[in-house]
Length: 331
Image 1: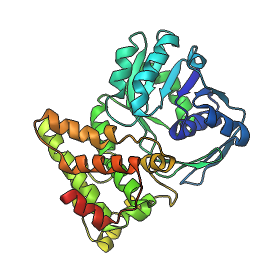
Image 2: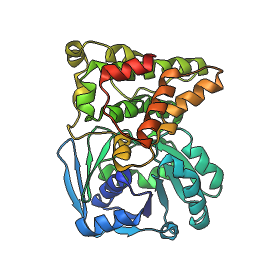
Image 3: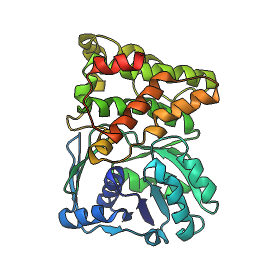
Image 4: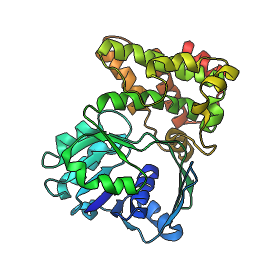
């Protein structure tokens, strides 16, 4: 069985590399600069638990034709590139191939399914954070395996993911899981605007109040829509904003696990801003704005975060304090 990683960026290189290290046959498809980097340095994978893996001799390609014979395709392109990726895959994939969207946001699976009627398309989610350290080195800084829509077609691949140390958790209804992950990802713009590692950012009440405001707004909209987020953490999503607002000393005592984050961990949105790339803000906080519009409501906190990230993309960049950012969100 051949597995293809379509969109070999940070998450793609990490997941695909772990699969190769576990003995799976994997072909990577990505940008030439990434292929050149891996050819020069090899692939070096580490994680917060102390794993340290070096993977050489990768099959790295830059054209869609490389996935023509793939049995399983993991789509990991940025959300804005999903439609283009779907059209590219439609031209080369064999009928019956399994395609899994492991992307941020909620609608990528639908986009792929619409354009790939002869394939089995499933929605999935990567709950952990991966930092691109450069020179072919990728670091998993937070915990988690992989979540995916339940389907019998995944059965032949379960063992490969388990051997890779990234077990698949299958869900009959994946939408509540996606919303639960998106609630956590509402911190991405807060972290990017802070210009701090995740642990340092979450250690400060000012930033946590910003995240709490974004989550609280989203939870009210989800309740109105009749969607209850899945429970991905020890703390139910509904109680998260209250805990985030606690004073620092009390937060450290009651939510110490939230701060048990690798000091290297940062968000992909911070990485995108650093690299001068367009972020996925429209597919994170922007989804909350769209949810509000579907209900005839507004989402001013999340809309403001979208606005601030767009300003950062245009430049110049600045590092916001928690109190400064919270004042902006409450204005």
